[in-house]
Amino acid sequence: MAEKKYRFYQLADELTEKYGFDAIPFPVSVETSKRIFRSESVSLDAVLDALDRFLGEYPQLKPKYATNAAKLAMLCATNNVFAGKMADALGNLNAGLRIYPEHRGMVVHQALALQMNGYDEAAAVEYERLLGKAPQAYDPVLRALAAKAFMSLGQYEKAFVILDFLPEKAFQDEALAKLRQSIADKLLPEPGAEQPTQNKPVKEPALVCPSCGEPVLKTHKFCPSCATPLHQREEHSLKAEPPQFCVHCGAKIKPGNRFCTQCGKAA
Image 1 (cartoon, rainbow, N blue to C red):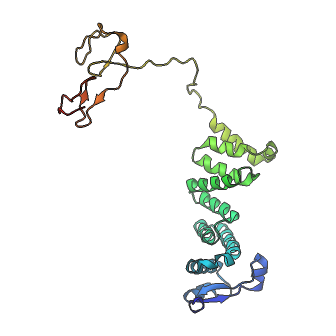
Image 2: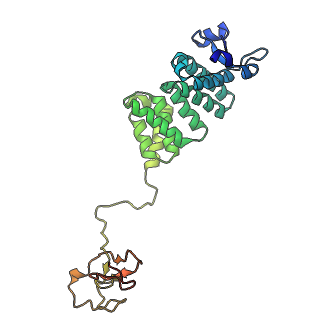
Image 3: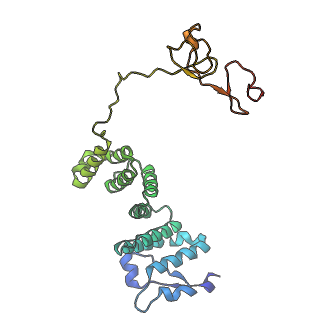
């Protein structure tokens, strides 16, 4: 069935040997063969697209092509990065990951491609997933990229923790040391900012009238809203209780009332 819709072509020996492809033929749909095989060269991006479509129809063959798909996707993505085609590079890696989703190298490069395309939030998710799978991994490059992604999102504490996990000897690298210092500088309080102190006075809670729930002051002898005498009541009755409201009409209900005075329904 596949042979009727697809033709299978073996890449030239020099390409197979140079990039370490397994010696298996690549499927090419009949309608795209002209786009793939040009007069003097082969469009590797088109070969990857054809393989992606083929394995979408025949997913049971993914294990057979997984290694070649990963190598081809990485090669195409690298070529497109050097050509300044970042969106195309991201598309290459997405195609490769559809075929071989567990390939760590492609996931790293996909996160980098997302980052370079300005999708910092998506890149941060991928970096966090990678670090979560290997939390003790000594990988300065990956951690530096992850720290930059979180730094761009303003999550400086997270960026610092990711980078500071590395042993001190790693920061003999000047670029890595400067990155850590730049994150640490972001964590410093702004000049003139109010510093939290343990002796800072605690604001007393506001008092409310026990009859109508409106705010009152300790110096008030009568409630300014309902004129209820306050000086004759115990001070503890003037507590900061939130006023109650009718669930039917939204009117304020006096404490102790069983019915709303606005709509007459049970409180």
